[in-house]
Amino acid sequence: MSDPSLPRGTLEMSERRRALAPEPEAAFRAFSTAVFADGALDKRTKQLIAVAVAHVTQCPWCIEGHVKAAGREGASPEQIMEAIWVAAEMRAGASYAHALKAIQAMGGGAG
Figure (tube, rainbow, N blue to C red):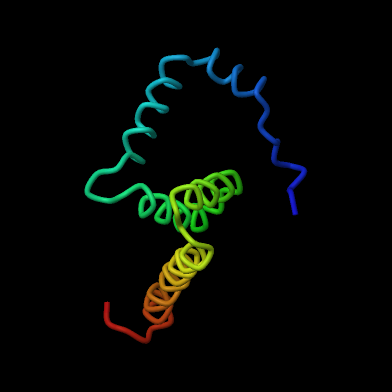
């Protein structure tokens, strides 16, 4: 199910990205580490949120990475799937809510 138009990351590509902009690379890694550390939310919860967001943004690398990270943090397959369903509802909910704009454009609402 891999998309041939999306490159599979390699160590060489990662090193090249780091070499092209080492300071932003280091800053991003530090930011990511801080974001996913235990805080008011535990690491597992943060990874489940990331799984949901990855599905909304439809990033295949993020989906793969955060599903695996959520599992490492103790999330069950059922919890991961529920997070995905939350993402699906939020994505569908936006279309549902924006239907009001279509109703308005068709002359069916005030405004």
